[in-house]
Amino acid sequence: MSELDSTWTHVADIPAQLDMGDLYARLNSLGISHQLKLHGEWVQLWIEYPEQLPQVISLLEEAKSTFSPAISGPPALSFQQQLQKVPVVLILLLLSVLGAALVSHAFPLVHWLTFQDYLLVGESIRFESAEIALGRGEYWRLVTPVFLHFGIFHLAFNGLWLWELGRRIETLTGSLHMLMIVLLMAIASNLGQYLWSGPALFGGMSGVVYGLLGYIWIRNRVYPRSILSLPGGLLGFMLIWLLAGMSGFMELLMGVNIANAAHAIGLISGMVLGGWAGAIDTGGHRQ
Image (cartoon, rainbow, N blue to C red; front, side, top):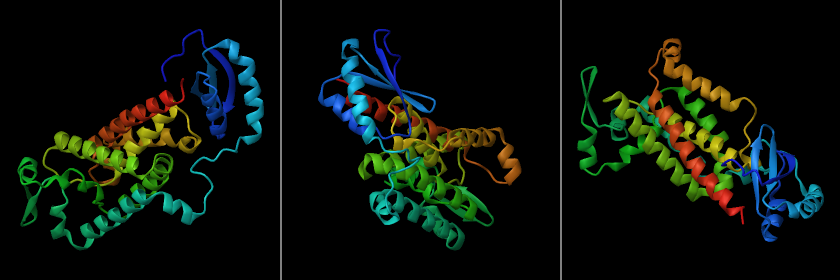
C-alpha cells in the first residue's frame, strides 16, 4: 500500500486476525472511501473524508458483533471440505510424490522431466542444450523439474510448506488463480536456476514454495486478509533458511547442492504477483 495522504483520517486499529469482511462490504456499499494498513499485529482503518468519521465509528461498533476470531489459517472447515477447496494443491502434492518415486525407482525415465534432456554415459551425465529440447516443442520442461524430489526429506519439507501456504491462497483466490501463479513461479524459478548454474540436474518444489511465501507476504501487506496471516516467526525462519542456503552453509551442513537461484527467483516472482494481486484488492475496496 502506498503511503497515505496526510488528509486521511485514522479510525481504529483492529486485530489482524479478525475477519472484518462484513465491515468492509458495508463501507463499500455506502461509498465510503477507505484504506487498510497492516501495522504489526493490527490493521489500521483509514478514511479519506473526516466528515464520515461518526458514521464509520457507528458502523464499526455495529460490526464488532460479527467479527469472527482469528484463525491463523483457512476457515475452520472439516478436513474433507478443505481438500475439496484445494484441488490444485492436492494435484501438486501427488505429482511431487510421483516425481520422488520416479527419481528413486525409475531414474532412467527422469530425463523426460528435467529442464535439459541428458544422456547417461557411464557414471557421468551429458546434458543437451535446453534450447534444443524447447525447439522440439518440449515446453513442459519449463515446469516439470518442480516435481522431481531427491529424497524423503526434500519431499517432506516441500510438501509441508506447499500444503501450509498453498491451501491458504487457493481457498482465497480459487483454483484457476492458484494454477496460474504456480505455473509462473515454476517457470521463473526453473529458468532462473538454469541461467545461474548452467547445465545441472536440479528439481524440487522449493522455488514455488518460496514464491507462495513471497506472494502471501506482499499481498497481505498491501491488503491484509486473515486467511493469509502466517504463524509468528515463519517468514523470518524461511528467509533465514534462504540466506543460509545462499551462503553455502546449508550445502556444507547437509552435503547436497541447493538450488539457491530457484529459491531467490521464486521468492521475487511471488512478491511481484502478490503485489499485483494486493493492488487489485486495494482498488476493489476503494471508491
